[in-house]
Each structure stands twice: as C-alpha cells, then as structure tokens.
Length: 378
Image (tube, rainbow, N blue to C red; front, side):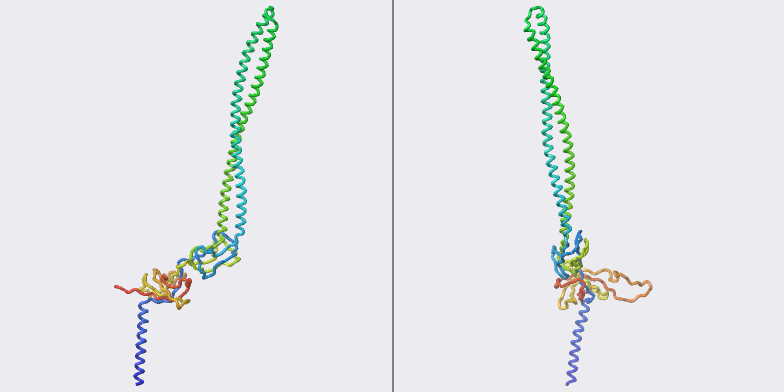
C-alpha cells in the first residue's frame, strides 16, 4: 500500500514538473528574454548659464527632482552686471540731455535766423526804395537850383540896370541857398542809407553763415543719436545678461545630475544640471543574435527593473539596430591573424515604454525584458 502511494506521489510530481517544464520551455520559445537591459533617454541635456559667467549663489533643485519648463534651477551673482547697467543708464541720461539741448538750440537758432533774414531782406528793400525816393528829390532840387541860377543871372542884369529892386535878387539868392542846403542834407541821408544797406547785406550774409552752423549742429545731433542707439543696444544686452543669471529649465523633465555647487565661479556654458526630458525614457536591450528570430518592430514587451522588482512596465519594440553592438566598441576585435572564438553577438533593440510609473525611471537602471515573438509565417 505504501509502495503504491509513493509511486502515485512520484507520478504526480513528475506530471507537475512536466507541466511547469512545458510552460517554461513554451515561454522561452514564445519570448525573447534577456537581462542585458538599460534604461536610456532620447533627450538628455546639460544646461548651463548662457553668455554670462560668475559665482553661483543659489541652486534650487536636487538630483531626481521633477521640473517644469521655466522653473528656476540656479542663480548667479548679478552685482557686476547691475553696476554695468547703472553706468550705461547714466551715460544714456547724459547723452539724452545733450541731445535735447542741441535740438532746442537748433530750433531757437532756426527761428532767430528766419526772423533776422526776413528783417534784413525787408530792410534792404525799404532802403532801396528810400534811396530811390531821395535821389528823385535830389533831381527835383537840382532842376529847381538850375532854374534859380538862371533867375539869379537874369535878376542881376536887371538889378544892374536899375530895373529890379535888390530885395528880389536877395530873395532868389536865399531860395538858392536853401535848396542847396536841402540837397546836401538829402545827399547825407542817401550816404547814411547806403551804410544801412551795407549793414543789411552783412546781416543777410550772417544769416547764411548761421545756416552752416545749423548744419554742423545737425551733424552733431546725428552723432549723438547714433551713440544713444548703440548705448540702448548695450543696455538691452546687459539687461538680457541679468536675466541670463537666472538659469531656467528649458523643458519639463527630471534632474539627472547636479554638477554645480554654491560659491563656485563658472563660465558661460559650463554644465550646472543634466536634465532628462519628460516621457523621453526608453529601454535599450542588447539581445543575443540567437534570440533575435521572431523579434520584430511592434512586438510587445514586459519590463522588470532591478530597482523596482515589484513594479511592472510594458513596452513595444520601436527599433532594431542593423548592426551588432560589437561594431561600435572602442576597441573592436582583431581577427586578421586567424585567431577566432565564436561569441554570440548582441543586437541593440530599442523598446518604447508604454505603461508603468514613469516617475520611477532613471537613466542607467538595469533589469530584465521579455519580448513577445511574432509567429513565423512561410
């Protein structure tokens, strides 16, 4: 009886062993299984300060922290840039003041010039009219003097003959004297007007000289405007540099590595953090060539990571590299001497993660992958 029971138990155990062995073998046939697995990322970027150097005064994130695009990562001491900005703004203020003064001066000189030129031209014309009028008067007086000269000659002859009283002769001589004095007075007025005319002409010439001065002031104004424009560009550049002293996350992701430390003086472009873009993780599998049959793009995969053995991730084969990993080794095997050992080559396979706790992933984690093979169809 005991012998029969023992035989029965052995048979049961053999059946159970056979069942699980069959399942294990079937699983191995249906799945390509390997532990040459590494978590990688398509987009991992080193970020540093753009165009600015200085001492790090704050670091806001630690390794493993999640960041959103625009989150502040680090801060440089911006004191020197603020001093530079203050100096530029003071110089700009001074140049703008000079610019306003020159603009006012140009307007004032322009206005004075217009008035003075108009007055000088008008005065010149009025003097010409007065001179013309006085010359006409002189001509009229000359005609009257000529007539009186004739009258005086005639009166003298009559007076000598006793035909004309002396009073009449004296009267003619008095009128003649008055006219000559008046003529002399008019000639003096004409001389004075000629002097005034020359002065008016000088004023017109002076107005033209002042026009040249306005042109010079306009050139100086253009030079100032050019300097102001350059300083405004410099101010904008320094303001941007002050903004650049704040390092911000360029995308949503996770901090993979922190390189910087507070108090360190860094140059522009020096990596401060290494960030991995959110949802850019994938699993890189180095699959033995003997397991490659049936593995195709689109096949589903189960992923187990050593760091999280109780967590399961799912994925899909996205890419199968056309060359083995050995082709990309830094020191490839040299078989030219005929020395050769048969070694199973590994083919890189990229698996896109489709399901699982993405926040747990870290670049470099290892684990195991089971890739569901496609059925062979002849």
